Amino acid sequence: MVEPTKKVWLDGRFVDWNDAQVPILTHTLHYGVGVFEGIRCYRLHDGGSAIFRLKEHVRRMSDGLKILKMEPAFSEEEVAQACVEVVRANELDECYLRPLMFCGDGAMGLAAVNTTRVAVACWKWGAYLGKEALESGTRLKVSSFNRHHVNVGMVQGKIIGQYVPSSLAKREAIAGGYDEAIMLDTQGYVAECSGENLFAVRDGVIRTAPTYSPILPGITRDTIITLCREMDLPVREERFTRDHLYLCDEVFIVGTAAEVTPVREIDDRCIGAGRPGPITKRLQDAYFDLVRGKNERHRSWLTMI
Ligand code: PMP
Image 1 (cartoon, helix red, strand yellow):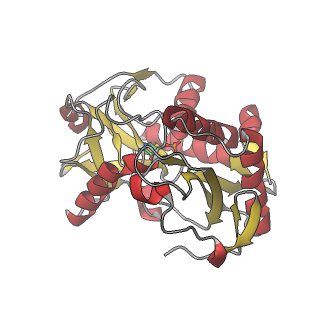
Image 2 (cartoon, protein in one colour):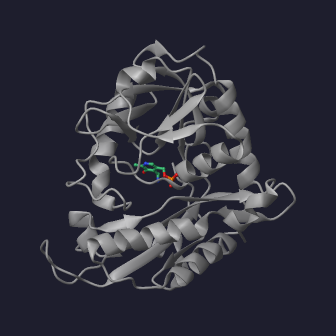
Image 3 (cartoon, protein in one colour):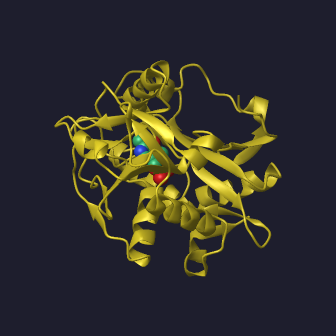
């Protein structure tokens, strides 16, 4: 359960958590046309807190609005500032932030265009797949639900309504006793998980689906690719199949919520030795160093609170 915080930023001002409410005919509640983000703020190793890659998250929201032909209600700078202020207002040093841009009420029907509204909430959220998964690895199942065809979902945006298949996939995986779902594209290649991008390692080569596959272009994915290049680890953005995954030495999944989570089992097959492998561990450590401000090279990815 989410533990309520004090304030939510709503359309340019702070309101109490319980007063952050919307009318029942809010357009996005009915049709899903809108965008959201998931962002993390971390306590730094040398004091203070910072939001990780805030600029990129806000930019992805703008990309989503453009795809949806929605008018922005605030500039990217204003939304970024709202994110910083909502963390301050709630006096949190580590939290998850949820900006949401949605079409308000007024007209109804699919073609209706109402005022774009914006909310930013934040709350304490620990490891998305659990602390144990971060340490020992998680268990995945290839889903019976596919990712969108590239001309069905506009997956370059983090668009609200597009999350229905992901939600069904995640629920199906959990009901089957697994932790997370792997979703294939409509041609059968591995795309991503319900809320994470996926990396597969075999013979030292790291592969992840390219951005022309129906994946969300994840900011953690980009961070990991950058780290691989800086650490001289061979990384390729190319399509691969589900059976390639079974034969991998290591698999890990990445996202703002799940951070860098090792995978120990896929479809009841052990991955590698069934515990986090050396490349996964190196990248996981490098990621946590980065978000906690220990990597001077990327201090510019941190927005101080
Ligand atoms: N894929 C999907 C479908 C997601 O919802 C997310 C979470 N935003 C990701 C990948 C990971 O993206 P990011 O690293 O930007 O959080």
